[in-house]
Amino acid sequence: MELRINRRALVGLGLAAAVAASSMAALRTDPGTASSHREAPKILGMPQVDNTDVYAFVSPDKPGTVTLLANWIPFQEPHGGPNFYPWDTGARYNIKIDNDGDARTDITYQWTFRDEDRRGNDTFLSNKGPVTSLDDPDLLYRQRYTLKRITPHGTRTLVSDGVAAPSNLGPASMPDYATLRAQSIAGVPGGGRTFAGQSDEAFFLDLRVFDFLYGGDLSEVGQDTTRGYNVNTIGLQVPQKDLALKGDPERNPVIGVCSTTDKFNGGKYVQVSRLCNPLVNEVVAPAGLKDAYNALDPSRDADVAPLVKRVNDPEVARLLQAVYGIKAPSTPRDDLVQIFLTGVAKRTGPIKADLNSQVLNKDAGKLRPSEMLRLNMSIPPSKDPNRLGVLGGDLQGFPNGRRLIDDVVDIELQAVAGAALSGKLVPGLTDKVDRNDKPSLQSFPYIPLPSNVAVNQR
Image (cartoon, rainbow, N blue to C red; front, side, top):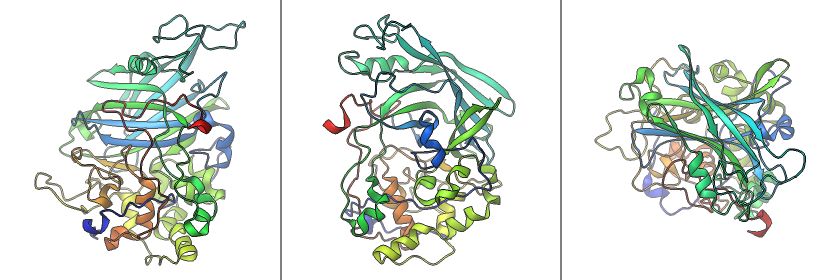
C-alpha cells in the first residue's frame, strides 16, 4: 500500500490537536507495572519512574550521529523544594534499540543513579551559597550515575562516575544554570556524549482533550498545558554505526527505539514503564489496560489481539465521528499498522534523488510487528523542518523518529482521520498549540534549559 500525501493541501493549515492515533493492550497486569505522563493508574504514586516522552533524530549539527532523548517525572513545578526532583536510586533507566526488525532489543543503554548527600541533618537546603560549578562545595546534594551498554555479547561500562545536572534551584542559588548543564555532559567512548539532568518540558499540547475532546465543540483550545513545567532528561548522542545492525548504517539504516524503567521490587527488577511512540498509552488505551501495557515487551506486541484490533479500529476515530461528525476511515486500518507497528514501507512526500531506498522507516529484515518509534538514519536533517513531519513533506519528522519540534498530537490525530490515505488534512481541527514556548538549543542535548519561574507566574 502506498500512502499518499498532497503537500499543497498541508501548507498553512496550522493544525494541532491532542489526541492519539493508536492504542495498545496487554495480556496481564503485573503488580509492579505503571507508566507515562500520568496515564496509568499505578504510575500516579511513582513519578520518579514515570517515562513521559522519547525522541530520536539524526543530529542536526552532526549528521553522522543520532540523538536519543527520554524524559521522566512529569509536571515538575520549578519551585518544588525542598527536595526537588532527584532520580530514583532503586531504578534502572533504559533506552533500547532494535536494529534488525525482530522486535527484540539488540542494544540497551542503561543509566543507574546514586546519591551524594553532604547536607547532614543541620539544614533543609541543597546549597549553602551560589553554585557556580558541579564540584562547587556550596552544592550540598548531587547525584552520580553509571551508564552501561548491554548487548547479547556482553555489557560494557561507558561512564562510571557521571554527574547529573541538579534541579534548577533558582537564580540566587544557581545564577548560571547553562554552565552547570554544560559541565554535566560526559564523553562516551567512540565519539558519543551523554547527559542526565533537568530540562524544560518540551512536549507542547492542550491537555483539555480530557474534557470531552476540548469541550465537545473545540471551545477549549489554545492553552499549552505543559508550559513552564520541567522534566528529568537522559540524553545520548552516538555515531550511527553504534546503533546499526553489524555497525553498518548503510546496509540497514532503520532502528526501533523504546525507553523503559525497571524498578527494584521483591528482590528483582520489574519493568514499570514503557514509552515508544508518543501518546499511545496516554489517550487511547482504556483504563483497564493502561498498567498492563507498561509491563509488555515489544517482542510480544504481535501476539496481543487487542493491540492489533485497536490499531486497525482506533477508538479516537470513532469518537471524532460521534462528537465532531468527522467520518472515520474504513477499517481495517493498514495505514495505522504501518505507522505504529511495522514502519512505513513506501515513502510519502517528495523523494530526493540522493535517497536510494524506497522505504521510509520499515526495516528491511525479517520484520515482526511491534509498537516502536522507528527512525531511518539515512534521511538527513531537514533544511526547512516542518512541524507536521512526514505529513508536511518533511521526511525527517515524525513518524520517522521524533524531533523536539514535531507536533506529534496534530500528526497522530490527522493520521487517525485518514490524512496519510487521502493526502488531505481536516481544516479547523486544532488545539492552537503549534510549538514549544522555548526554542530548541543548537547543540546536544538540544532540549531547552529548565524553567526557574513558577508556572502560575508565566
